[in-house]
Length: 511
Image (cartoon, rainbow, N blue to C red):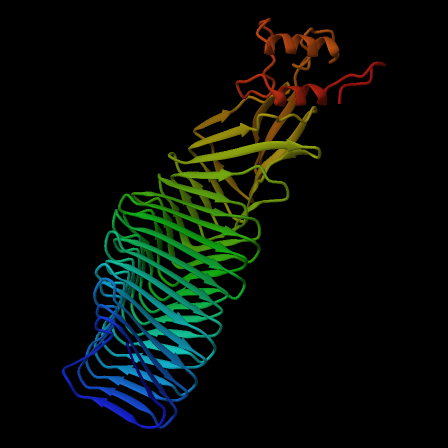
C-alpha cells in the first residue's frame, strides 16, 4: 500500500495514464489553497485495488482526460472533496463505478465541475454520489446516465446543489437500478429527464427544489419501472416541457403540500403502460398548463384526497383512466373512463369547470354509514354537468341508517342529459334506494321497507329467538337466511347488524 500527502505544492502527472490503486491500497491527500493536483492524461482510481483521493481546504484538482473510479470487479475508487474553495475539474468523461465500485463525495461547500459525459454505475459496477452541506455544488455540463447498466445511488441534502447542463437518465438499461434522494437540496436539469428508460428508477424529493428544462419521461420501456415521491410543503418540481409515461410501470406520490407543475401536457397511461398518481394532505398540487390526460392507450389513475388540487387546461379521462377525487379539480373534464367517489365524511369533489360524462363513462359511487348517518362524498360542480354513461351506486356491506332520508350525490348550476343506465346495488338492513334528478342536483332517496330483515321469526322485534335462529343457520342446522351484511357469509358482521336492531325486554323501539 502507498500514501502521498501534499499540503503546500503542486503534483503534476503528465503520463498518458495515472493508475492509482492497481491491485493494492493507495491514498492521495491534497490540502490547502496553495496545493494542486494536475493529471494530464487518463486517471484510473481503483483498477483491481483500492484508491482514495482526498482534496480539501481550498486545494485544486484537475484531470484533463477521462476520470474513472472502480475499474474492474473488486476494484474501488473514491474521491472526497471537502471545504469551501475546494475545487475539482474533470475536462472529459467521468465514470463512477465501471465494473467495480466508485464514489464521489462533496462536503462543506466543495465544488466539482465535469465537462464531459458522466456515467454512474456502468457495466457491472456500482456508483455512489454524495453531496452534503450548503455551498456544495456539482456542475455536470455533459449528459448524465445513472444506472447505465449497473447500480447507482445519489444522495443530495442539507442545502447542496446538483446542476446538470444536459440530458439526464436514471435507470437506463434493463437490469439497471438507480436510486436518488434529495432532502432540503436543489437539482436543476438542463435538458430532458428520463426516469426509468429501460431499468428501475427511484427518486424521493423531500423539501427540495427540482427544475427540468425539457420533458420528463417516466418508465419508457416495458422493462422499466419508475417510483417518484414528492413530499413536504417546500417541495417544488417544475417541468418546462411535458410529462409522459411509457410502456412500463409508473408510480407517483405527491404528499404533505408538495407541488408538481408541468408547463405543457401531462399524459399518464400511454403505449399500453400503467401509471398511478396519488395526492395526499392539504396543499398538495398537480398542475398541467397544457392538457391533463390519463388512460390514453394504457391504464392510469389519479387519486387525490381532501384539500388537494389537480388542474389542467383540459382534463381527458380515457376509457382506461380512473379518477378518484375528493379534492378540487380545475379545468373542463371529459370522462370516457371511471370517476370513483369513495365513502368519506366531510369530503367533496369540487369541479371548477364543465364536467361531461360520455356514453362510455362510469360514475362509481360508494356509500357507507356510521353513527352519524350516511357517509358519501358528493360532486359539487361550478359549471354545467352533462350526464351520460352509467351511474353505479354501491353500498357498504354493513350499510344501515334505519330511516328514510335523501342523500345529495351531485350539485351543479345546470344539469344536462341523463344517464344511459343506472345500477343501484342492494342495501343491507332493509332499505330501498333510488335516484331522483332535479334541475340543479341529483339525490339518492333511501327508504325503510317493511319488517327489519334481522327479525328472523317475524314477530316485530329482534331478540334472543332471532339470535338462536341465526346461530342455528350458522351451524348448518337451519336454512335461515341470516346474511344481513350481504358479504356471502354468516359471521360477526351479521351479529353486529342484529345488535344494532336489538329490542331489550320492555319493548323499546328498534334502534
